[in-house]
Amino acid sequence: EVKVVESGGGSVQAGGSLRLSCRISGYTYSSYIVAWFRQVPGKEREGVASIGSPGVGSDVRTTYADSVKGRFTISADSAKGIIYLEMDSLNPDDTALYYCAADRLTIGKDRYQGRGAIPPASDFEFWGQGTQVTVTS
Image (cartoon, rainbow, N blue to C red; front, side, top):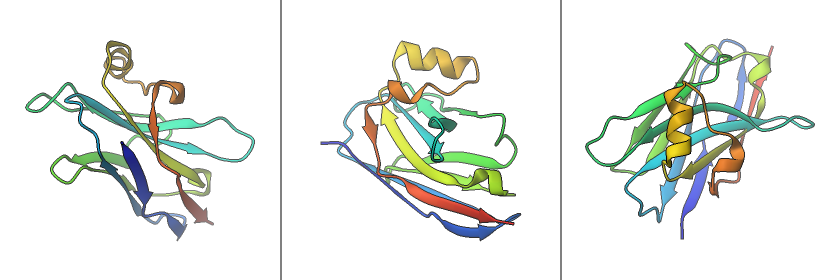
């Protein structure tokens, strides 16, 4: 059974930083793509960043939403099974419930990354429960 658990959320003042962690266990596929999404009440879930690889020893590719480019960094510690989202220069518009999602890197998802985009939420099978990020002005 694949389990996805997010942590690291909290409240921070505008201009501050937070690092979210996504711990994935029970994942046995060689390829992967992991994405961070965020959602505020009344709005659709928005892709923030993704990281993917066809398998061990292959290149890792990252993509970002335009709204976070230059401020957020996604990275992976494959040995520990943890995906990080480093968030700097936070502003109140970043306030949301942040979710981590994982799945195999299929041809379709790879094409999204190839265009610099993040696959839609509906393309991901494994999800965490979310961690709240609140940025105050």
